[in-house]
Length: 135
Image 1: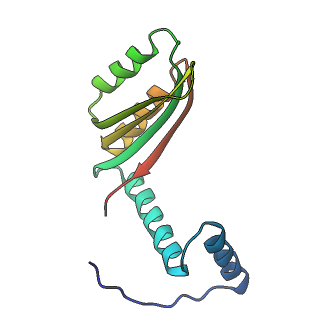
Image 2: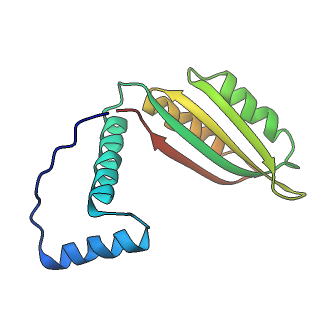
């Protein structure tokens, strides 16, 4: 466990009020929890912008499973990339739609390229890449 170090931050009153509203609306237990999350989020963003270190991403897609050859195209894109596919999950939302998550590990630029390739396929209705990283 890391040692906790306290420090103070000066904020304009209106910004502090917005911060406190966010704490309540998002269910944080304290200002510290929210500030830690904001710092982590910024660090992940910067790591992805740097581009050279391995990162992890989760690609969430919703697609029409009746779209001809869509499944095979998604599999081919995954097999032909240099990205490590750590895990795939697949659920049937209803008769026409499936939701899939693909956990990817690799260089951020390459993860983004595979996400764009899959997200741009005909029959994909929703695609979102969630950037993650370890510190």
